[in-house]
Length: 84
Length: 232
Image (cartoon, rainbow over all chains, first blue to last red; front, top):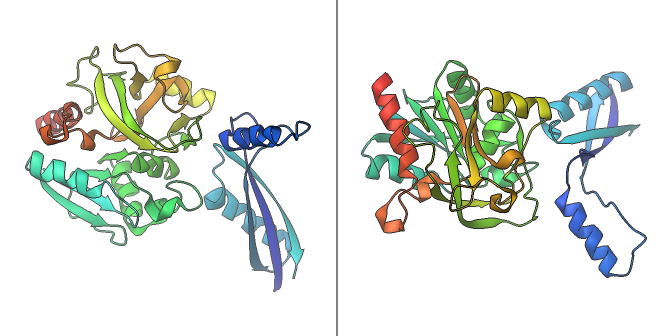
């Protein structure tokens, strides 16, 4: 069995208003950082997983994202796996 | 007629709901602990407001996997009556007993105030006895109440008359100004296709006693009771 670390990014869907991101964009503009725009805020989750192969680990993380970590009505996820 | 009110760690409207059902209406009402699986023969289950499991991950996401919810999902799929108020609505969406999701309010603020609601259908036990031109004053208290679902789901909800209530102004006009949280089509509450699972963000249990200065919430409880007692 191989141990992997997953880095998962969960972001609000592009077409949805992200009020948190909008407020932070406005605050950055107040700081004079007017070149920055379209801030969107999501979650970053790390976890370790033991699996027979990288493909197996990928399937399991996919399952975790679909069943609990992300709500696909409002969010999209992506992740990377590294062997530890 | 027996009611059950679920108690999760972080529920904070469970006692209000129990008080209304038990003391205002005089029905046997049980608190159902989240770690239990037995619904004790309850005929109608309430999932109360609050911050179940600290709103960790997403509102309602963790509560959905508690032991009691497995029993409630089976109960609802068998036609049992389940109603979620506020956080309870969020839990029911996460459990896929109701379609859609409750997003962060468009103002990014927690909103605690009285709002106005009007029924959008009278084809549910919850709204059947409420005249369609009524305007109910009911409090809301939430940060994540912006109802959202994809276009196909919203169209289906509208077509099947699954919208229970819409946010309106004091005169009953449904418009953007009267929408406190940015919910699609001013949706404040919905039911499932089977019309036995209900969810709403406003708190009728906080508006059901003269001592609290507002009894508009009783219209909803009255409607539920009248129709359930007739059919049971």
